[in-house]
Image (cartoon, rainbow, N blue to C red; front, side, top):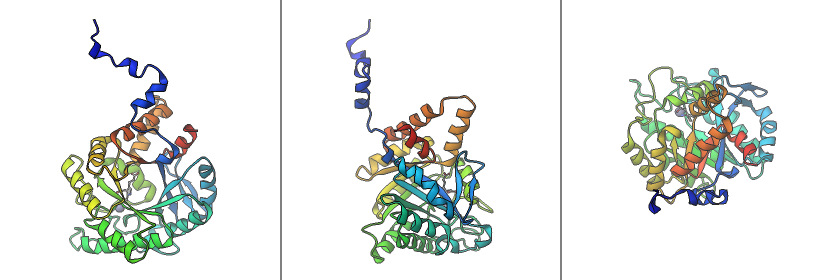
Length: 328
Ligand code: PBG
Ligand code: ZN
């Protein structure tokens, strides 16, 4: 005998009722598409580690975005991929006026009205050693010098027209420095700050480092990205970044860190919460579908739904082009 207090089916038997059981619904506006801009101007190079993703030269960018914008793309995040020859110990190429990111911001803002342009802010793509900040002689992080430079890069992206800046470097105190820099530059009213707050030292960034040529030449990032097992540091980083002026709180990676997304939602209930489904998650889902483990569309939509259920409002994903198609 089934007891009265066991009965759940009736609440979702009729399909019309199912959305009523769901916290949020996926829309095209949920997604931000991370793209790689190379300084080879005419190039459109497939990225071996990330199926269907490209390094895009500035002369290919408009044609690349046109069909996506027509399908409803409203937010991109830019990553610069400079040539090895321009890398130096200061990451000078990060904000050079003729560099890929500054050029891409200007092009996208002039051609696509209504497209939000966000910029990842970090030095690892631009430093000769491949670390996310400046190093001391003993290869530890020089936090003070790093923060100063990262804030300078963020403000230069904002000056070039970026709508959002998103520091992924994990230096201490960079949110405050960037926010102050935006304020001093008279840009704080129109440029938002998205904090990669709970960013863990993950195995899942491998394909990205291949795509962006940003792997560290020695050592690893464990002294600035968070230890994967730590919930406490994630929570403290979220609280700190809220105090330091972050407008959006991000958790990264996404699927192995759903508990942290939920923590973020609880700690920052009045901020939008973002989740970054990173390159390794993307590659994993892709290869599993290709191997016949599951249907790609079903699995991707489920992964997105799970991120929303955990508490996020905004999802950065390389599946954005497919999602724009599927949500039609
Ligand atoms: C740069 C940066 C990384 C990612 C976003 N910004 C790589 C890293 O920290 O090594 C990862 C994105 C992805 O894997 O898709 N600091
Ligand atoms: Zn970095």
